[in-house]
View 1 (cartoon, rainbow, N blue to C red):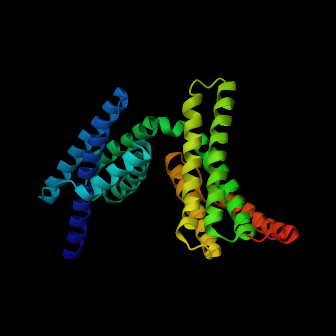
View 2: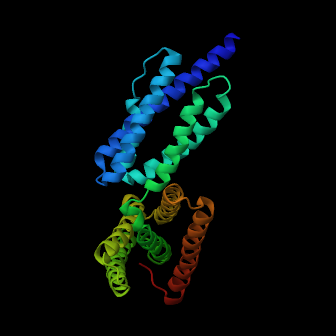
View 3: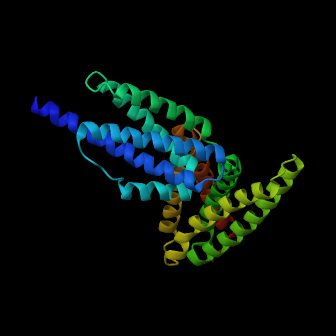
Length: 292
């Protein structure tokens, strides 16, 4: 009996803390966004979560404050990756909360009312999630994927052909910056030809994604000594895989797309091109007899 009471009390306190944290986060996001309808919905959800926390407090007989470390962490995610991504993560939390509440309704009757609210919140959040940056995810994928395929291939080829990290970094930067400008210009012309009124913004997202990827892939060649070109290439490949994993995780959360399939597809293409380019670098060096 005592063990059951401890478990019940722990459950109540964890639920109370979650509701208090979510109330504070929804409030902070509602204060930041400009869409009046979204602001209204998020404030309403925040008030509901506060009400739930108070109901749990009537059972636990404790007053809990928001966990500010958790609040700051998720607030940072909202600022860096967008409130849509953060709310999608919370939507997953809502699903877990719903399942947890269903398992305890028999012993805590008030959970039935809270459960209805949480299911309504989940539906509202799904309808709400439409952030501008997600409209340009296709442009970001295009820029990032093109940079990963083109530059990992180029760097792999340069590595065996040049065998000097400084020279490889220079060649990679020239290739990457030129390709960024070319990609942005092509994206702009393509978007304008298709009647996209936001052609400039679309090309900007493509170019920025491309340039960031270029810089991250070249960093190892700037850090390693000139003779450590193979370790630099290995680290670059690991960075490329990390970029692919991170971006696909973002997309899987924000747009409910499958992570594994997209990850292995992008990683397979990028690494496949790198391997082929690596072999081409060896052949070109041998055939031309160039020794840098």
